[in-house]
Length: 193
Length: 193
Image 1 (tube, chains in turn cyan, purple):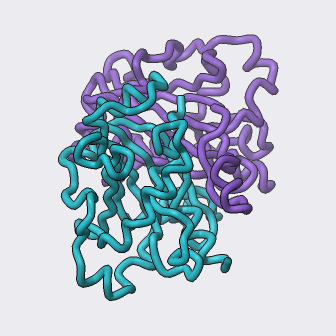
Image 2 (cartoon, chains in turn brown, blue):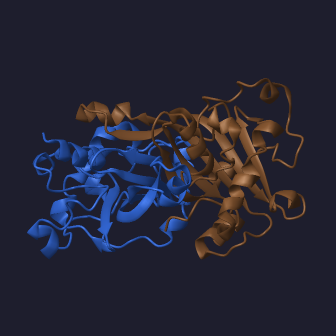
């Protein structure tokens, strides 16, 4: 596995963030399912031409930016991402109380940004030291609806870049990878107290 | 300035976090005012023996963990910190709407943790790649009360480790440093949209 592909895989399942994809062949060649940057998005024709046909989240839930903080995450290396996982009240309360599985109505959002040095801060200190969220790269969701998303463990997965959802082909590996976190109802992120 | 002391200074004023201290002499020798780790806390006798006598925040505001997310920050190097800035509703709305100065009643909290690799995630990938919040290091507050904290720009500064407030000596550099961010009402952190 190349170094780049590792970054993609790592971001796919981790960072304490939502993490939507499985380390499948598309990861090995480093071409897709990057969950923390725009490096691979939109490069394959199927992504550009098709809308998700499967049980994926294709509309951005409203008000997500005002939800509460579950945890932050930093992805090192070329991905170089900094982000946060937020949750709506239903999901947040379940996280905080450690109550799994998450009830229907739970929605998680992973906000991903480039991890950039703070010029404002570093100017004072004369050295690159502090890193803050830069340009947004993508936004990911997990929406719990045990009926609508019964085929994927009750969770609908969503990935948006520039407001547009990823394709079904792009989203397909999400569920298989999240199945590895069965003990936390398919959610990788842990609540940070 | 030594490398270590730089880390301390950097954390003091940045990370997009609250940032409470000035790069004064105590920073230069790397002994105090570390806002993102426990490396320097409790090392000086005045910290251990005295409670803040000045206009500082000496009681932890209730409910802060449920406040909303303003931004995340990562401090590289030996400080190796990962954290988040949260705000109560009054402060959050001002942040979001870019309305300065913050109204009375605004409270900001910077939650600092060690930046640690996620063993759970990295185990899957066989490489250290993903970083998440580890052990908490300290919690910092800025409380806006234009009368109570008139001497420090209307802001009360607070720094807590293991639930205990830092000393007045430790807190003294906060205000002078925050004065460098007058255009954002003494707050370093920017709202991440």
